[in-house]
Structure formats: C-alpha cells, structure tokens
Length: 315
Image (tube, rainbow, N blue to C red):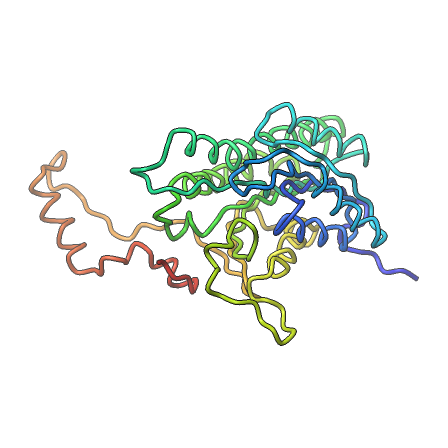
C-alpha cells in the first residue's frame, strides 16, 4: 500500500524556479506530491539582464517529470500583470485548480542610496514587490471565486520570499531591502484578507548560496568532505514544503527565517518605550528631556538586536 504524500492532489506555482532557491522549492513540492508549474523568465544576469529563455524552467520541469512527478514550465515575467495572470491560468488549466503559490522571483541591482539611479530602484521594486502582488492578486481572485461558488473555504497557501536585508538592514541594497520589507506588509495584509476563504499567507527570509548571493558568501567555501553546504537551498525548501501543506493550517501572517538547519519565527515589532506628555502636547524641550537620555544609555547598534538574536552578522 503506497503512502500518501503531504501534498498529494495539490497543485503549485513556483516563480523564479529555474535556479537556486526556486528550483529547490519546486523540487521539494514535487517530492511531497504536488503538481508544479515551474516559472522562470530565464534571463542569465542576476540583475535581470540578457535574453529571456525557457531553458531553466524547462530543465527543472523535466527533472521533476523524470523523478515521476508532474510539472509544466512557464516562461514569463511576473512583474508584468498579464503574464502573471497567464501563469495562474496555466496552473488552473493544467491541473484543474491552484492550491499553492510560492513567490521567489527576483533580481539585484545593488548601489548605495546616494548613487542609485531611478531605474535601479524601480526595476528591483517592480520584480520583487510588484511581482509578488501580481501573482497574489490572480491567485487570490481564483480562491475567492471558488470559495464563493462552493459556499465554503477552499485550500490555499501563499509563501512569499522576504530577506534578512529587511530585518537587519543592508547598506548597499536600499531598493532590495525596501522591496523585501514591502513583501512582509503585503503578506500580513493578504493573510488577514484571505483567511476567511481558507487561505494562509506567510513569508520566509532564506539564507542560501545562489546566483543572487554569490558575492555575499564568496568567503564561505563549500564543504569538501561530503557534508551538505550550510548555505545550500535545500536547507530552506523543507520549510516551504511545510508551509504549503495542510499541517501548517494554523500558521498565517508569519515571518520565518531559515538557513543551515535552523528556523526562527520572528515576532512582530513591540513597543520598546513609551512617553506621555505632561501637557496637552509635547514641546521640543520635553521630547529632548525624555527621549535623548533613552538613547544615550544604549549601544549605537541596538537597532539591529533582532539580527544578533538570529545569529546574523552585519558588515
């Protein structure tokens, strides 16, 4: 008697799945039983440069099929609203419905804020943040329509990709850090809006050695003794598989960090200190008397305490 897999009978879309994290996530969802639409625009440059190619998505889809799974490839730019619509429609036409959406596609155009061009800002925000919105919009519309038609909640899972650049700051990536922060806001808003339809939305902050992070981890060599690289995307993909599964039904609107065999659940911001005006409203002098001493007694880098708790280091 064959064992039922956690994602049997479910279908998934994974964006940016031709390489790196997206590839590992698509393979993991397929291994757990899902039928997968492998999306990738296939441009060779991590900055979004070069000719689009179907080859990366096709290769991953073929890898899934060779292992006995179901997969189709999709060449498309998720930052384009209509191409994102076509991606979701492909999942519905190929598998009858969409159950899981994993948003992973992204590019990098790093520059200090005082040197960054308007195009470098816009392009990164477009691919990461608008790309997440586009696919989420059409997936959410699909689930809402199905729920209204059946009169009951449906099955839906969204896993979005944020970054530690949002949590800890990243001096040379103001566009990327802003986009990744926006994705967390999009995720929590989506989680609240879609819960009544049976859909959950969560975000992850993965740390992995991929084409996009090759510079970041250049000094951290891969192990040569056969052990799995601590920065391998395969450390992140099991969390995506879990969040996409029925087992994670009560996990909603959450942010989780994952890397090297570690998962951390990040709390939402809490009030660190509170000051009340002695009169109807504050004066400059009163604010100076209350707030300035609070910061004088604290280390300059306390803002990044969350990063330290997670075992992160800032350059």
